[in-house]
Image (cartoon, rainbow, N blue to C red; front, side, top):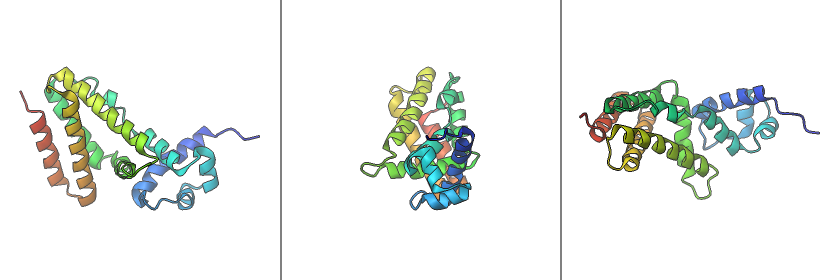
Length: 187
């Protein structure tokens, strides 16, 4: 008879996974070193999560911001510009930096044929575009909100990736602000 899952332990494991992958990378991720760093065994990780890929997806899911809440109260163009700038700053060097570093690796891995990360990546991108497009509709800033949201999400993700790789916060910060100002001009 299988013993019941210890949900507290499971949550602790998930909390440590993102920081570990941010520090060590996804490409060479192996369960044994990950388990050792988390103070458990690879067998226990499989018991809790079934596969390495499911473990990673579940860890990222716990880190995903509530994008509906991020954009829900926006009704004015200036609010949207400020919220996007704040979101960029937070997720490119603030508290969310580890999650973003791992997310960028997962998005890259999702490009491979039959990647186990494709569903997660599709959902992450679709959620961001849907919520940003809804805010664009409310502010009446775009004739085609989905296209403008796609442009912003994709370009900001590229600028964040640039910042993660180069560490150049000044240039990438100016680039993000230039993008936001160009795509969402003040009225």
